[in-house]
Image 1: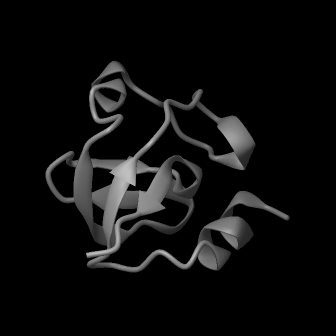
Image 2 (image 1 turned 180 degrees about the horizontal axis):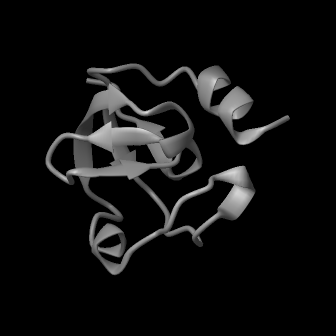
Length: 77
């Protein structure tokens, strides 16, 4: 399964409250983008999915960065 197939199957949607639960390596699990030091600082924090960037990942509102689906967990309110 490709990254975009798994991204679509992840079930995440715009407006979901999520937590970044892990650091990942650039280009991991088929994700075609760089993981930055600034993204490391988001691990453990909650945020809201602002938009779905497809193969770029999910844009988190306050992080102003796209994160791959496999480092996010949905927070149930």
